[in-house]
Each structure stands twice: as structure tokens, then as C-alpha cells.
Length: 36
Image (cartoon, rainbow, N blue to C red; front, side, top):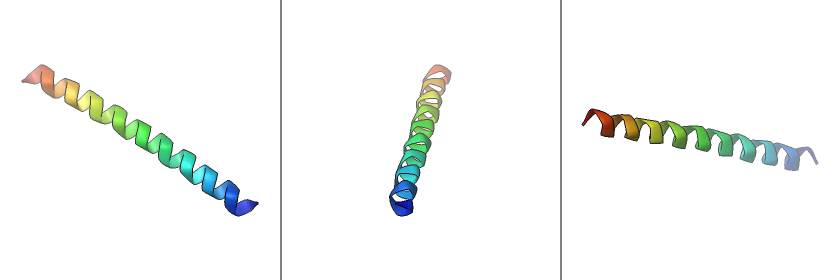
């Protein structure tokens, strides 16, 4: 039970981190396009 819970929490954490990184990447690309 604990292992499955840990796996789901890790998956959720990775998903959140991925979403944050993708958002940062999008903002960086937009700002780069504005400057160029």
C-alpha cells in the first residue's frame, strides 16, 4: 500500500515539475522572440 502511494506521489510530483518546466520554457521562448 505504501509503495503504491509513494509511486503515485512521485508521479504527481514529476508531472507538476514537468508542467512548471514547460511553462518556463514557453515564457523563455516568448521573451526571446520579443527581443529578436
